[in-house]
Image (tube, rainbow, N blue to C red; front, side):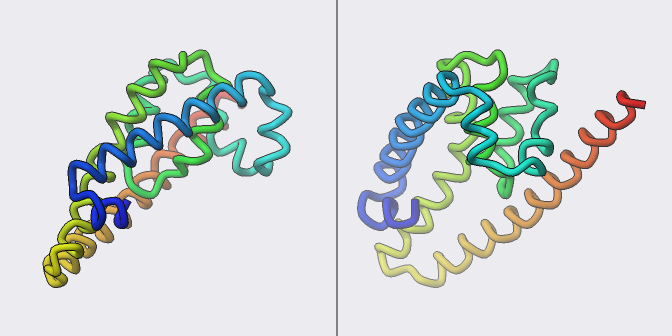
Length: 157
């Protein structure tokens, strides 16, 4: 994303990155739908799978996918592999995940664009803000996952 910003500017880099994300997400989604859980078991350990297993029973799946893709520091790769195992359609997944990624992608491509323009102090500020927001996102993600897992454990009892 940063290099795309350096080479193509903020908007051009963002478009390039989002097109790549949509193409890769489509391929992963279709492959996961075809091979289902067998491939998931092969790719990810039990702890990783269990952490997001609530998605398969999530009533507010659209909202949860949006929030998890929007928050910096969430396991977006794992999410991209898990969502196809739910009842969400490919077009719905692509729209939700792409819109949710825009703030993160645009901030990174903007940071790259200012580096390309030689505005290094501005880049330091941009990436400092991104770092703070990312740490907050990681903490929020951790809190959300704990909350979801506590609800799941309480339902088992």
